[in-house]
Length: 481
Image (cartoon, rainbow, N blue to C red):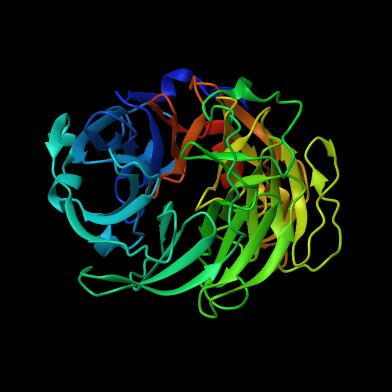
């Protein structure tokens, strides 16, 4: 089968999976680098909820060359289903190979009159996780509850939990609507105690005015992004723009970009917090309200944010400037004023709210973004990545000459050196490489595989799940072949 053209993804390379209930929660099994596995949590109000473990399997006609270079050869999905007692809003897994079966869920207890969220750590059966292909279709499996996280510090409950991306299990970080909580996790997962808290935002204000549906992209005209001071929806209540909407934990060790740093987006601001000092170190005004943030896994000091105006922005958090004018793929545009960060790149990825952004953990030139416009965009940011696309930082393709010592004896027995002609692979341009429209509702789940650098999973609110791969033509340019 010929490769699809650049910027296109052949539909037969996508594996589609459907949930019976709605979903907002999706994450990769971060600690397993041998199998491409993802977890999805359902959001059913009046029914038993579930955690679906899906595994992407190579097709039978994949050979060693295909696996090495990630060629699109299709594939199949296997799945098993665990019972979960409540509707799941968020999930996270540990990056430690020894704790790949550890799962954290944040959920709302059905039947309670309050909107308070709860968070629990669970253990999945390791044997089941390692034999999903053989057990595919098995349902009603049990999760082993380990510990529920203390939330006395909060009026609202824990909305989201993160494990240390370096695999350490000594600490967890969670947040409610205004506060970060740093948990100390006991060996054996028997207790999780709040060691310190960091107030990120002012207390949210409530109003009784109707809020736009979070699943309908027509609730606001894409050409008229909301004011940074507009109300947002959470648990059925309109809350002020100061509420926390997303956070990320730095995977880097040492210095400013160390694994003690947390990036938090709240309204039209981004705060950088130090978990060791338990304080906010930097606040960065943003040009538009943001809902999602991610750290570059290969380049310290770089974070990416997704905004309500459909724009994705990349920031250098080392730079201290009063204003910034970033480069823009396909044009130029105004950047945001920031103290302690500089916007180095931005692009119009979507026509509506950007709900998720994610760096490729192996090739940070490639990033994904999801939106309430029902689409997922695959983009290249090679100009600001840790390594130039195609191994060259000089622009497009072509030929160049390199000196190569042939070691040949000739004439008077002297060594001769002659130039060798080498073809340089064309470089990917910054900007959107492909737009995926497999989904029919707002995109709330987006994750790269921990095992395969070219595979990713996306899910929409209506329960549709798609596992797909980066196009071959893009892969070859990234690898420089």
